[in-house]
Amino acid sequence: MQLEGKVAVVTGGSLGIGAGIVRRLAAEGAAVTLDYFSHRDAADTIAAEITSAGGKAQVVQADVSQVADVQRLIAQAVSAYGRLDILVNNAGVEQPTPFEFVTEQQWDHQIAVDLKGAFFAAQAAWRQFIAQGGGGAIINISSVHEELPMVGNSVYCAAKGGLRMLTRTLANELAKHNVRIVNIGPGAIATPINAATLNDPARKAALLGEIPLARIGTPGDIANAVVWLATDQASYVTGTTLFVDGGLMIYAGSL
Image (cartoon, rainbow, N blue to C red):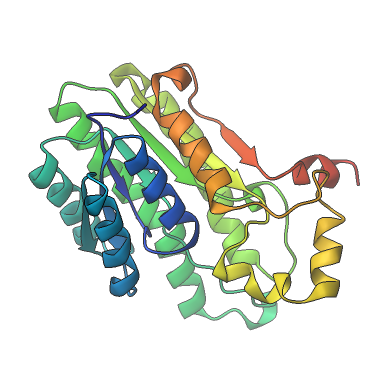
């Protein structure tokens, strides 16, 4: 087990990529606190799976767009397991809308969840890392769209682009405390958010035509990258984005 004795928090850990990350971290020995916003049953099911297999997991409800909630989330993880070693900022929302129809509410909501939430969760985790004497890993689940434009999804791209620069800036600021911060940029992953595309044969075929490895990714592909980045094997990696996309960025860069 690569993460035996480590303590992790995963935001948005009840579904999709987040659920895959939680299961994988626990399988590697980490005690995991998984946050959910509205899918309590799914979160409880995952925690029960982990504990019944001899692992450690607890469920916390938190709205990552609220600073008090993310601070409470980190505090509850520390209260349960005594420390914190890994934060995975996975919670995110996407509301594709043509630019001219984006409302103030849509802008505020997506930026609050996708960028503000990651910022203040990282801040709360950093404070705990310092209280422990330094050291820790913050892993943000970003997107290929921190780099690639996506017509009709300007707010999401702006949030992920902001996360890209936040990560690079904090990597410089936190390095003196041996705290690493890295983004993972998933490509097309088989999750509920992509169900409409994956259930449409024509749209799926077009998407696969843009992916050199010619397959859709899985939550497990992202979870594997999270585990590696959380271990000492990645101790010299900070301030960058690891794209896990089947080569989609290569294809886009050749256009």
